[in-house]
Image 1 (cartoon, rainbow, N blue to C red):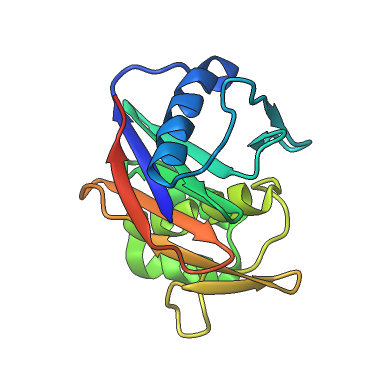
Image 2 (cartoon, one colour):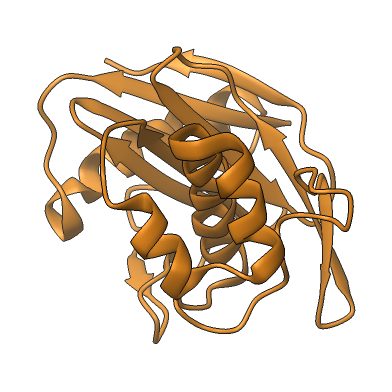
Length: 186
């Protein structure tokens, strides 16, 4: 099962936030009858910054926006992103970072469309461990619809939208479609 642990309030970012990740992982292991030694577990980072447990068979991904922190746990590679929809120079950013199909989608849907794509791109990058500004598949199909699945380097990656609030976009990415259960942490 895939669980998202959600925390609202002040939290530590970067390496200082590792105790909160471990607490969420403890709850995940308990709820899923996994025998994991989280006391000794070490969180390290891949070359491009993706955090992972060095010696545990447990995948996770982090995101935060404002006072909202989320951590996704899964048995498969996974990525999650959360963004607050807020004014920005989205047309300029899309012009630099999005494919032509994606720019067309943004022209159709405006600011909301920009963030629809941004969370997919971030979740995909977190799942694959690659950087955000590297080559990746288009998140929009030929009909100008959001892709539910993309193929990248002979692997499929599936997206699941997580409804949070009207002004927040949240998407998870995995090698298979993910059923998600939400948990409150704290």
